Image 1 (tube, helix red, strand yellow):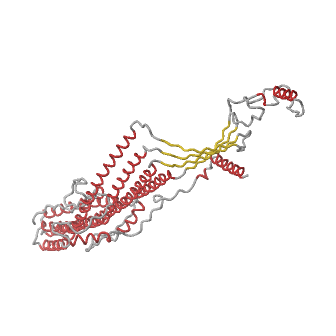
Image 2 (cartoon, one colour; image 1 turned 90 degrees about the vertical axis):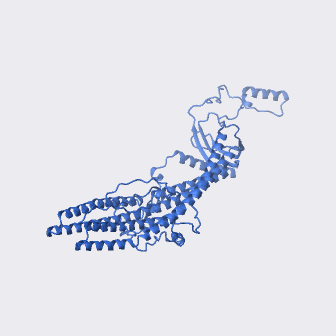
Image 3 (spheres, one colour; image 1 turned 120 degrees about the vertical axis):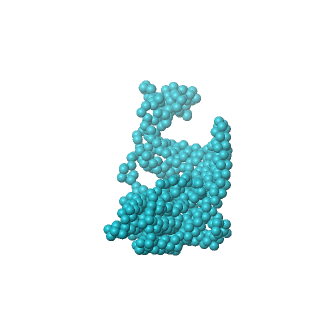
Length: 569
């Protein structure tokens, strides 16, 4: 009874499985809402008003394609882990099939060809004599009443599987690895190392994004400030020209002074245009990192005019310890031989994960030399109905153990092992090299931070002194006791001092961000000689803004001005 119930349940499941394969699923049933990912979620809106660095950083990550790509790599690595661990678990699959025979070589083989009279059935009389009973047996055999006169006897031949028009099969296949020679363990270790590498890559991508956004933010703020300096200088040159033109009308200034003042004013106009172009480019770079349209309205808070210039709240906790330690051990030669310990670097951890990947690859290659043993079982229910509707009345069930041993690979195994061991040796040397480069990169970042702070502190009183000098020169020129050359020189010095102060503030804030993000950043962002220096041409009197270095490198540049030609009054 239980066997009949099991057969009925098995037949029902097989029919449903076959129907799911043969019957097409409607289009409306196939449409399912996709799982939301970071790239599909709506990015946060841009808040109104001038944005601080913290606000810009909070907007950057949800809008970054690079971070979304790194997150997808982590999900892929997790899938590889699941796939590698599946080799330890049993495998069970179901299959169902239906065959319709249109022609068969067994057709008509078992059909009866006897068209004579029907043979009288065999009837043995136990009371008859021996001769009568033997005669009855011979008669039944001769006419086919006993044994059918053939190999298959007189039974019903329609139930045999040969040449049947309809064939239904429903089967279950089971397999379980008993011993893989270490293949499964090596694959699991390989997938775990890949997942660790993907996680570290996501950490590095996020840190690199924050550093690039910080650079772009301060570059945009700096370009805005340099535009204001250039515009103020142009306004001062215009005021001087108007003063000289008034003197020419009053007969106290010669025409030569008017021409010289006009040339000085006109030379400052290309400087302002160039600074406006630099500002537009800086804002475009920041908008690209924030995934904004070029025409989007983006306003930034000026974070470079603070006299104290504290670190950004996003980095103050991680950079204060290093900055205070460097300041307490500051020397005249910018020495960084302080008691700080080198932080752990994600780049070094990534290289270690690569070493573990190579080791797992070597183990996998060696495991492929070993035999593998697996347990297999197949169970099938079969039906040969006269019509389409099946009646599963036959079954097959087998259980076995299989073993596979590689005997001859033509040298492929030896070649794979040689390649894997060479890659392992290479990764070990790269790990040693990365540890040395990470130590150098860390000390380089500390030295850059110390130098940037000293440079910014040295410009503290220069702007005030330059402003005072220009006010005195303006009064002297208005009183007629100084020359236009002295006034122009004082104006250029003030412009130079203001620009240098702004550039030094930008470099200090970027250096702080790099030190704060240093454990997660790639190695080599600011190693001397890592990025080529591109010479630039500047307009006389211009305030050049160098483009951001490649790979997030640190920029340490000062604004340079060309003093306009001026003569005596």
